[in-house]
Length: 373
Length: 198
Ligand SMILES: Nc1ncnc2c1ncn2[C@@H]1O[C@H](COP(=O)(O)OP(=O)(O)O)[C@@H](O)[C@H]1O
Ligand SMILES: [Mg+2]
Ligand SMILES: [Zn+2]
Image: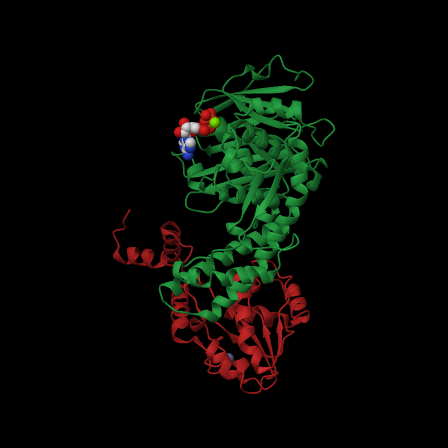
């Protein structure tokens, strides 16, 4: 898949912007705080209908405006053309259409436009809190599987309802045990499907990750496992073990008014030669691991969707070099379309990019224009 | 901006209390009515008043009605052994349109949702249980196929199970997250036919 063009109206610090992309490398350059990351964020938003910076809709809106619109044309690998429009009116909800047809569910868009982003913030995956790692998992798996996405939405909704009920019980508004049981059953059903999907995914993904990681550290072995709040046997988690885990927190749940175990509390453990990277990894190890992780994500997504993902690199040009040197990308030509940002224009010069055309775009104070090479 | 007519202001502020109507739309509606024939405006006003004066909830099934009990509850031709449990009166309408269902209804008045402060006591569940002691042999759980509807169905299932009635849940395959009222007739007919015994 490639993105052919995009136009923005009142998005972040852009009033209007319009750009055509090369199907190969696109370098967006300009001084810091002038709008490079904002531009990538808009592309990401078209593909996944959310900001990779976890910003609220209202923060995406240009400070002077009351609505924003992003318009983009994608060409899928089967050559079909998809025009996506995201439109937001202050205090409303985002409205999304594909080829002029309004879509009413995320499942119509997520996964159809596979995308991988590498940005400085992404280092939080290996060094930040558990929620960063769950986010990584959920964004990847939602792109891979529609049922995973549906289960996740269902689980989150039930979780909210159940926590509300637990709070009511805590504050003795009404101690309605019978309806708590109903939410608990729903939580167990959806939650078990999510955990088992994650477990199965991690088994194969950990191997892919390790084979890529070895290109960075020949003698290092990396492993990825789920650290679950629920005990599992034989690589599968049963609904009964979920039920038992909830039962063991019965008292605590009622005192604190929240659900203590489940996929929303799970974490990912990265190890290198048995060492917990989250706690003890060196800077270099974090970096090699994250690049390997992103390559593995790209390859996995490509393989599962049979659609070449779009790669966004925000201020990560040195990582691009390492990616190219160290890795075998799934596709024959290597990477597909890449859109990257950098403060400087010359970062790709004197490197082996001549066989691919590079388009250059200059960003200045919320404007962007293509510059001839 | 404020209008110099007090009645104008009053009408606009009343209209803008309605869901989905902001002050701008309210102004447009009031201006429209200002230019409309008096008898048409009167007929609209009467229709609005009738909502509160004439329409009532059936004390048996809680469907909306003008007679008490409602026409379905008193009908001679309906199968009194089956009760179809739905969330809202709109759902009765949707199922009636399919003309496939010949039994009685019970309208819960919503679905369980702690987030919206709706617990079992806020729904017509107690009234349902009293009804089930009569001629009923089968119940159909036709709450919406979304998170809250599923939870409500499970809650009722647990309550009704000891009564050892035949119990079926309307099959999924309805638009996910979509309310019954939006399901087209074919999907609904299929769902009613394909309901599963629980
Ligand atoms: N909603 C908004 N409206 C207007 N300007 C914004 C908005 N959000 C961010 N900005 C501005 O965008 C700039 C940051 O852009 P960014 O893309 O992060 O820069 P960089 O080029 O360094 O990647 C800042 O100057 C910030 O004030
Ligand atoms: Mg930036
Ligand atoms: Zn009735």
